Length: 90
Image (cartoon, rainbow, N blue to C red; front, side, top):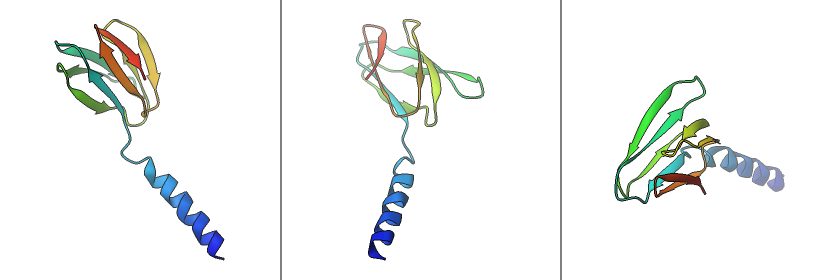
């Protein structure tokens, strides 16, 4: 019986550990950069990121258009690093 309780507790921990996770982006450039975020409903939002700033967004999947026009699909756990106006998923 103790093993069943342990397994149940472990599953509950895994289920709640994803809560609050989101993709993030850091702008390593000395000027602001903008990402265009498209959510699952197709709604687009411009996300301005100041120089040296880190932001969280996209908690449950989205498409992101980088400052240089590249487009990536995210599931909500990635880190985007912007350097020289180019965003790369890490």
